[in-house]
Length: 208
Image (tube, rainbow, N blue to C red; front, top):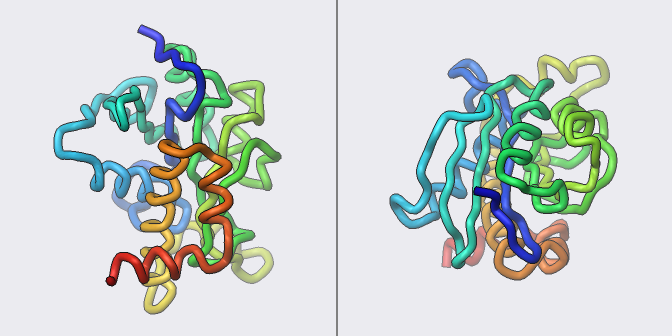
């Protein structure tokens, strides 16, 4: 049965690489965000399944159908899994939110946007090619940029010390941004969470 409605996000895709050796690495920021979203949802509200070369969670949020997807194809082939699932469910590119890591954002920052280029991210590049569209929504999680020539190894490393705390806070903010986008729309979420101080504000609210 296709998931049809007037507008809004119907599918949230978190990008990453499967396997224990990749857990908690920078490149798996999308996977980690999806896992945190599921943690804040009511227990049992999303049902897991393995389909479309992915781990897929189906449920409802604020009275609407919602699907969360973690492609298990490895990062560079993420698009094939997204294409299969979205077409099976009748979900348009404009109804998809893709969560990925971003080298051009410092650790602790997040940014939402509509459409755009792949920005050199192979997961986004694959999705654009498979969907034949770049109009899906994006949530980018900052992981910082390494020294020139060390990107491949860098994205597969983890976070330590202060950087780990900043990254954890950014994931909490990402969850709040997703909830806002689902309830109030992408424009409201962009205005509220794209600013440099958004992570600090969310952290302060949680501590109080």
